[in-house]
Image (cartoon, rainbow, N blue to C red):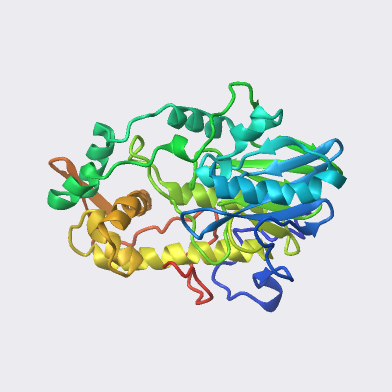
Length: 390
């Protein structure tokens, strides 16, 4: 762990433009091709696997242990993913041993999908309590239709008429279609605990925002496996679940970034769940938060008059969205509404079953106290790179 003088704290001066020393820099070289592995540190291999959704790929990492290999994340339970992963592991296993443990960062199918497949072959599964609980619940959910809770959440967000009818008709993707069944016997890792893998000691940082009990692993020699918590070149989805409509995932995400910042320095290498490993973890988290603050500014202008979360999708994404995209993205819009309400910037009013939001009106001279975010020390105002998706 870096000393207090060395650490690049994520709450440091967010108003300053990044310096050359703080730049986000991809590691040298090219990404591994399908079915291969690229060594990115002593005893650490980067494997890129194909997935159908999102950026079209997911990164998993093979770590050398004393008695074999520890795999962090697995890809989706799909034939093309399994083939690519087994081909890559066939290159490693003759010299480095078989998969003894699988560590999962979070419950999304592209990260946990093949964990059960490895468990059937004798691997120990390690994940956070929340990850395992959500995964087991979703694996046993066989319904394809929308639940009353999901419909009520969509109505609360402002979905109505033909759009609501299309949302109800559209079948859900079954979680079990992309995730192998998990064993009941698994190992739980908690925040602050450590994993000894080979010569490295990895500290677990368990946070929320993107997924329940998302796991980030920070090593004692400057590596950080971040899953989808911190990503280069794209934003992290911060959705509100239908069963917890009042959550503020943005604040939770920023708090997690702050705690990761206590374990990294400017030389630390981020091994993300998507795209290319890089250095500059702290500045990248600042860029991601700056992108969120740019959305906040647009929303406060948009909310000069009452609007629902659904009404705010255009202000957030700045393009016309299909019905399928709107159905997928509106929980993130709800997250922004909850975040701004918690900051005291907007107020919500129930109109029937729908929540309508508007910018907080203040008497002249009475200013709103802007949130001192756990991830930053002051509101963002620098004009550096922001996420392409915003």
